[in-house]
Structures are given as structure tokens and as C-alpha cells.
Image (cartoon, rainbow, N blue to C red; front, side, top):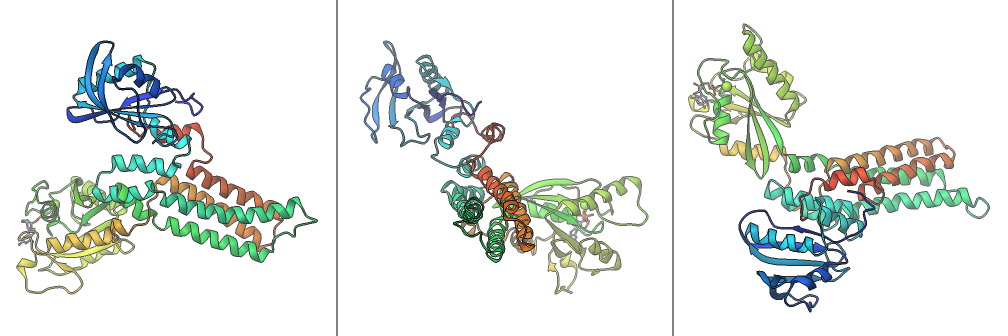
Length: 443
Ligand SMILES: Nc1nc2c(ncn2[C@@H]2O[C@H](COP(=O)(O)OP(=O)(O)O)[C@@H](O)[C@H]2O)c(=O)[nH]1
Ligand SMILES: [Mg+2]
């Protein structure tokens, strides 16, 4: 797909392929009305009205439909758009699509409707990406946050930062271009402005981790000595009997993963116990997996035996966790009356405390409700923002030592370009195609 492709008329089935109540075929482009004129019994279409009639192929009736006409530029793509609502059988929609193609449209490529909306400046790239996020969201929470970008919250934030950068750049450039008439800005002003811009970028990036957790979910590893009840807890959290539970220490020898839906998807990882001494080869491999899981997890449930309390072996493992986000879990609390103050007392066997653990786990992984999240960012956007930040940081250093403003302006311009790449103001075919390739046909 080429960015400069002629804006010919495209068509596609917009509803899922299968049997349903209604099927929708969408047409966009200059010839949309001409095409519908040839195949619809009631072609005097009025804007903002639905039009009832039959799709016909010559004398043959194909289906009874409703037509929704959108006149450019007031449509999703910014072009003339026709939506045909027909009966939702796979053969009905295919017959109508074939007829539309025969009469002058070409089959749309993946994401081409949204791409046109972007190229026609109906939406910016962050909004186009929000469309894909919304369609592909795996949890209702992520759908709730990605819709905020669709409404342009991120776009507005980025434009504010862009304006701040642009203002400084204009002042520097004016000083360079018209040295007789315009004084170059004070270095003090530059330093303050750059610091302010860095703060603004940081505030957008501060939500990156939360965004990634909403988008990809979080991984939570269950860690502890053998036999403390890790696999039992894994099962209790998931309410299933997936992991093998035995009373022989060291039975779980590899890593078992399952997804737990806590609004955001949580990948729960059951690991082999960590025990340094007297282990056989197979178990050693399991222990290595556990250590690897510690490194990769967003959160760790550290499980110990409540009856025994934290012993030196537990403390050794805890040492590995000291820089990590973890919850201390005292399991088998059904066997003892000694409740620990510092740990969550649970029993994987009776289920006591398991719901409290789920609540705490959710809080630790992501303590923000989707309603309270202003916007989300994806990794592409985060990279653009980081690039912009490093450029401004360079400019700040240069301003602090009173470097020539001509040189400072180079970094400021790069920052601007990085933000333009984020919004799609400046973007290559490759990046664009990569983004729209993740869409489905008909969107
Ligand atoms: N009484 C009691 N026994 C438990 C509890 N959780 C696990 N167990 C038992 O402890 C043994 C080891 O459990 P398992 O989940 O395999 O431990 P892992 O090696 O840490 O995965 C099994 O016999 C379990 O039935 C609990 O909360 N209370
Ligand atoms: Mg186990």
C-alpha cells in the first residue's frame, strides 16, 4: 500500500464474517454515489437520512437494504461514504460486495478506511492507533482507556508540548535570522523553557508503565521454597486444578502459566521452589526458571509456611527480591494460630484470604481505575517521546554552558520532528503501513 496511492474508490465488508442479524458493506471514495446509483432501487439519497430499497443486479434482486449516505467531508474517511446495511448472511454480504466491486470499486486493504481518515486529516495518528486498540482490546478496562485517545486527549497533550517547543524554536530562529532587529533569547529563558518542556514530556511518559500494563497485562510470579503451597495457591487463584500439587518437595519443575482476569489480564506463573542445597539436575533447571521468572515478573507473590514462619532459607530467597515489587504471603495459616503482622495470612487449602490477596494483587499491579486514567500511550509513542526528551536534554545542557544558539536549535528541531512523528505529521510509508497492517479489512 503506497501513501501516495490515488484515492480511488474502495469497498469492504465491515462486519465480522459469519452469520448475523445485519451485515454492513462500506464504500468510500469519489465514485461511491455513482456506484450505488447503478445498484440501488432508490438512488436519490439524502444526507443524514437512511434510505430503504433493494440492491439489484440488473433485474435481479439481491437483498432488501438500508443505505446510509455520508457526504464528504462529513464522513469517517472524509470522502463520500456509503454504508449498506443488509441481511447478515455471509453469502448476502459477499454478493453485494462483488456487485460493488464489479461496478467500479476496488477491494479495500487492511485499515484503509482509517488510513484515509488519517491522510484526510480527520484524525491524527494517535487517534488512528486508538481505533485499532479499541477493536483489539482484550479487556473491557482497556477498551475504556483506549477510547480516550480516540477522542483526542493524547493528541491535545502532544500538541501542547509541541507548541511549547515551537515557541522557543521561533525565538531562537528569529534571533539568528534577524540579528539586527531581534535580540537572541536569554540563556536563562532557554534553560527554564527546556526544563519545563522536559517536565511536560515526563508527565506524559509517567503513565507509560500503567499504559503498558493496561495494554499487555502484568505477569505475577509465585516464588518460595518447595512445599510451601505455591502450586496450591496458583490453583486457588485461578479456581482450577492446573498445577500439580504434591506433598513431595520439588514437584513443580518447570514454569506453568495461566491468565487470570482481574480487569487487566494477569499472567500467573507457578514456579519450582527455590532451594539451594541437595537438589537434583531436573530441579536445578526449575530453580533457574524461578530466578528468571523473578527477573521478568511485574510482581512477585512470595509464599512461605505460616506454621514455620520465615526461616533463614526463606530469608535468603527474599534477599533476591529486595528490589522487586512483592507481596509477602503466609500460607497454610489454617495450621496455626500465629498470624503474621507483615504478611497476608492465607490458606490455599481452605480459600481463606485468597480474595483479599486478589484485591491486593490488583492494587499492586495497577492501582488506577480506567476511569481515572487520562490517556494511554503505546511503545511507538513512548519511543517518540523519549527521543524528543533526549533532544531537549541535549539542548538544556548546551544552554547551561551558553553554547551558540544556532547549535542549540538543531536539538530543538529534532525534538519537534520526534513529536511530529508521533502525531503522524511527519511519517514514512513504512511506519504508516506497519500501523495500518494491524487493522482488519473494512476498518
Ligand atoms: N494445610 C494446608 N496445606 C496446604 C496448603 N497449601 C498447600 N498445602 C499442602 O502443601 C503441600 C505442598 O503443596 P504444593 O502446592 O505442591 O506446594 P509447592 O511445592 O510450593 O508448589 C500439599 O500437600 C498441599 O496440599 C494450605 O493452605 N493449608
Ligand atoms: Mg509446586
